[in-house]
Structures are given as structure tokens and as C-alpha cells.
Image (tube, rainbow, N blue to C red; front, side, top):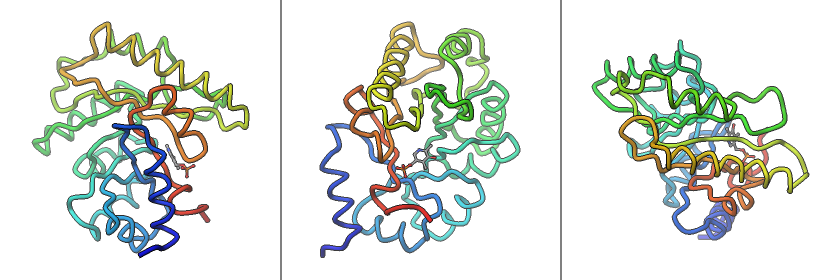
Length: 223
Ligand SMILES: *Cc1c(COP(=O)(O)O)cnc(C)c1O
């Protein structure tokens, strides 16, 4: 059956480069909207807020892979770790320590991405390129056997300047390759590069993204 959601889903999927994972960003969307996309076959969903994630996960099918894509506060790690398939926004050793602790308490290993600040805006979270290199060298990777660093995540500047956005994604891709080549932290595999949203997923994939996080292009504008 053709519905607006189904049409948008097929359009988004048709534009994915081979091998790229689609995470449907479902923050602010209802359980019914998520359920409708699930019924079309989507399994990876992204949430930004711990409380919203908990409420939705309790009501939706267990085989959904929940991606935590927001800024995670340490105090909320205990709510997110039991539910998350992948935590995208790790940008401090203290947060990594907390995730590791909670993962061990759950008897599981949690996959995480290190967030890199690539945008011009001041407000976005994430490590600078130099902080990332330093983190790879000096954080307590060997002690954190409750987590696995699977790659990097970044958000480009919120601008109409497509050249600028393309440059930022290319920079993140080069950083990803540099770290992969030098020996990624922990056991790996280091194979996920999370970049690209509704407005810039095409540029992100051109630059080598392996995972795009798409909300608006699937569900329509957020209220
Ligand atoms: C909201 C959000 C997205 C999705 O943005 P859209 O423009 O709606 O596709 C992607 N990534 C992060 C981190 C977000 O917070």
C-alpha cells in the first residue's frame, strides 16, 4: 500500500549508497509513527532523550535496534546502556568510564562511537581532531572491556554552504581513516562512520559515511 510514509521511506532508501545503514531518527515521533515505519521493515531507530527512549522501547518490538544519538549525561547512562544497540555521542573519558561500568553491571558489551566536533557552531558537542588523537592514545581502553569503540560520529555545520559541509565530512572521513590505519582503540572492529542527516546525507555518503541518521525526510517536519 502506498502511504506518504511508505513513499518517503522508499525514496530515502533508494538514495542510500550500497552498504550504508539507515537510522530513522524518531525523537518527538509517536509510538504509532515508529510502529508504522517498523511495519515497513525498518529496524534501526535513533533517539536523543533517555526518558523518551525508555518509554518508547517499553511499548515497541524488542528487535528494534535503538541508537542513542543525543548528548548522554553520565547520570543517564544507566537508563540508556541496557537499551542501546549503539551509543553515538561519546566525547569524554568520564562518560566512557560510566558506560563501561553500566555495561559490566548488565553483563554486556556496548558499542559506542566517539563524537567529533566538525561544525563551525560552538554549541555542538564532540572532540576536536587533536582531542580525538589524544583520546585514542591516552584513555583507559584496556580497562574498558564493557565497551567497544566502533567508529566516529559527527554533525556538519547547519548551513546552506554545501561546499563547507562537504569539506567537514571529508575531514571526518580522513580522521576516521587515520585512526583506523594507526590502530583503533580497543578490540574493534572500527568500521562505523556516522554522518549525514536529512539535509546533507548525500554529501555525507559521497564522503564515505557508513551510517546516516534521518528524521525529517522520513517522518516530515518536527513540530
Ligand atoms: C535530530 C537529529 C538527526 C535527524 O535530523 P533530520 O534533519 O530530521 O534528519 C540526526 N542526528 C542527530 C544527532 C539529531 O539530533
